[in-house]
Image 1 (tube, rainbow, N blue to C red):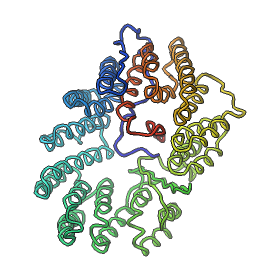
Image 2 (cartoon, rainbow, N blue to C red):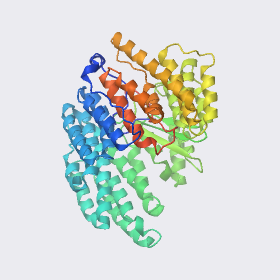
Image 3 (spheres, rainbow, N blue to C red):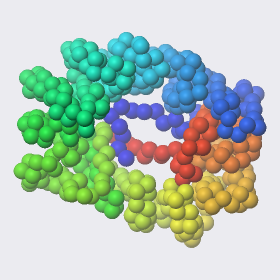
Image 4 (tube, helix red, strand yellow):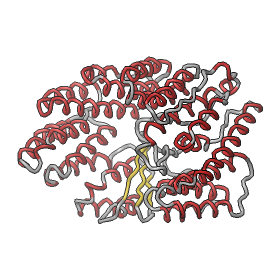
Length: 522
């Protein structure tokens, strides 16, 4: 999966600094075992302890934790949500350039939802002209504009549209025009009209689109503006007749074809549910692929692009007809010899992504990997499908273990975590209890060893084990976390436990925190 335009800090990144690892257990507040499994009080207690521990940690670790802490606590304590979101915004000033903008954008997004009356004021508080922020910074504010416009439409309905048009002009005069946010707002404002007065809905959408197209046609624009306008076309497609959008689509494609690919480096990929995939490695083809749903409605334009853009040809084919496909888009470093910079990582990403829609295609991808990568990837697929196909997941675990005896505690823990998912899905409580005990013993031993040698590497599957454990044996799980002396890791696992309890009652056991495998920056 390619990185999104606006970087989001991974909340469960199991990495702690050496200084964290050396902090004594006495420096961390005790985790209290509460008998009310899954109660609001339990969740709030776990999140509060994670937050309090986080305040002792370095900047980058704190900003990786706080977004999820805010997200989870806001559901139960709006007052704490606002307090922690303001804390995140204040923390942003310890960063610089793009980093500062990312943190401010995340914090502002929370505050907008928690305090709708101040939405526009908060939107203006994000400074996209931050020194060091490049073109990737603009979409952060565009995403915030979508949230603000959506809130105002929910509150005021169609009466908000003139205000939003004025706000869009103001944003455009200071930087990038929020084409997509306006498109979403207009679409939202007309939802109640469809099926009752379709012509009125079309007139409202057209009244927004015409001046936006006029502005795009006669105003200087950059690649990010092209992307924004393309999103507007996609949002309005289906509401407006395609013939109304077609001239704008042709102009957009011409502008994209003139993009300086030395200045903008983006990639895109497409996956079908049948297991086919294709990638493009330049900003032009990446943007065009992201517009595939529109382009494919214009056969002449499609043929022209496929005949002149060789790298795009196969990718566009995978988006046609009745094929179910998904498209990823994000920053990239360009092609190397016509291939991605790390083919093994690409294959693993393919397997992870396909495991949610086509397990057998995911398994076929995993089988292409060398033995060590193959085994770990099969275990990941097994965890993903365990809720729906526990027997097949058990077969994959057996296959992964065959001829691949775990060489160390970390690999052994990987296998135990996968087995625990299957045991939970099959409701084998005794087997699950034994797996949890063995897993936590292994994790504790590995963490202590890493501390002894001064390493900041911790077993990645400990978070997975905590997720299963807190749902099935909360006392054992809390005891494991309580006995950890690595403050950073403890803060993350308390957060993992609280987050799992807050949503675990609504999700199947196969639902686990998504592992985002990002391409390395170049």
